[in-house]
Image 1 (spheres, rainbow, N blue to C red):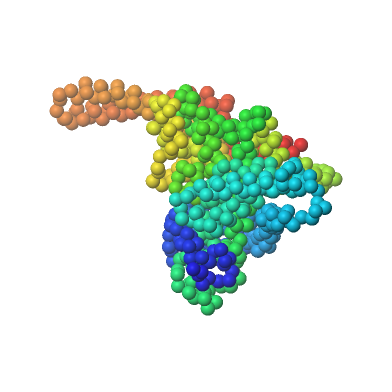
Image 2 (tube, rainbow, N blue to C red):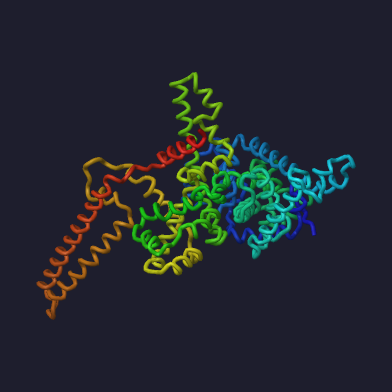
Amino acid sequence: MSMFLPPSVPDEFKDASFLEAVRSAKKTLGVIETGLSAQSEFELYFQTGSSRLDFVTLYKRAQNVDIRYSKIRSVYWKIFLSLINDDSSVWLETLTQKRGTYATLKQRYIASLNDNDNNNNNSSSHSNLVMDNPLLSTAGGRWDQYYKDKELRDTIVLDIDRTYPEDEFFVHAAVQSALTDILFVYCKENDWIGYKQGMNELIATLFMVNAVQSTISPYVDDDSKIDSSRSGSSSSSSGSLWESVQDIRYIEADTYWMFVEIMSVLGQYFLNADGKAVPPIVERSKRIQEQFLRQMDAQLAQHLLKVNLTPQLYGIKWIRLFFSREFHLRDVCVVWDAIFATFAERKQLKCRLLENRREQANAHEPGQGQDAHVNGGGGGEGMMHRDPSHAVEHALEKPRRIRLDFRFVDYMACSMLLFIRHQLMDRDQSHCLKRVMRYPPIEDVASLIERAYTIRDQIERRGKNKKPKQHHAHAAANNLNISDRWNQFSRTVTSAMTTYAEDVKNLMGGQRRTLKSRMQFEYALGTKMGEILNAVQQTINQHREQLSGQQQMVAPLAHATEDVKLETNSTE
């Protein structure tokens, strides 16, 4: 049964079953009804005032979990993943160009694959019988490529069929066909990586959000609009910017480019070392547990090392899939809000730093600045347009120089480990492994995200406002992380209060609680608390002296400088 939807809706999406699938996806994502429509919300945030968007405001909305129930979350993701930039006046031009490019790629790879049988059957008798013989499948021949493409597509289809099979949205034929086409085009364009398991789960979540919040959303929200569209009427204004950005005809193309941006960094973590060195995924997993977690909770990190819990056992799944299997899809999207926002924030810092460097280079060496820009030597263009396969090969040869974008994934992993700390401490390897591989349900993932931001601030901004030589008590305490200070305080208080309890017992004895005894009690309490505070202060001062020669000032811009140096060196 076909629905009376506007002509702009593709035929494959006009089936009533697709509309029901989108309704199901909307419930999965937990989109709540407000008095503001998707188009009105879009116009409020992106078409009010200047066409130049304030990135800081966008980041804050993601950090404060303000876009959890937004009807235009996909627009935020498109901005964070560089499908569109911060200037809304050029969005139409940018989208037209990228959507046209995807249509060309799809025609080149998919249409040619479908037509290959007819072309081969109708080939002339004068064709090369060696290169075009389907029984020989000579390497480099037309049939050889045809069989490889068929095998690749069959592999993708197999995984797409197993992607969230319990969800009505992902079992719809139109959705599965679109997901298969996106992955097939990507693999053909990026044969250096090909197809790897896990890509299907990343692409599925992106496509679901884009589909639910596309121009079909008003018809999902209100069935009466389906009937009204029969006569050509529509609740939204024709040709609006919202309709162009969220056009359902192009959700496949938009999802493709968003996936390309993710894989430009994440692709290296889908590759094995091929016998050369430690794979990037192993290197990053170790970095999370042995460096970041140790800074936040040395006792937990030491325990995991003691029980020989290999970090890549859970890191592979967490890093590659952005925690897609650890939470409900509704919560996964909230986590991705933070991951994408911090990725865009760091990328903007790096681009700003590159621009400053280029300006300084042109100012000091005007004759060489242009050549450096053209050749990509040390400039941003050389980094941005470098072949991803070269970057991955370099990462495999020198794993210490792997790209560490999407760093919020690392901080989120630390937050998750700290959350289940009580279930990991004093347990053996099998129990710890079971706990991290099957993460327990959590009532509100926002608490983990908030903690991850705190971890980020502790790691990246420690020492930013550090005063030399002179330190007050609170300044000294800030040089230690929260976990260390709490562990020290709890141990000191436990010891002191045990002694104090004995003193109070001896002091009070069997006496009646007279005024004199109460005064003695309060005096003893004040004295003992003074001893506790002095002990805590001494412990903090000792640790401060031990760490004074080791701590470094690590600000976000400093991290961006480090990334730029690594990527610049890899292009030399």
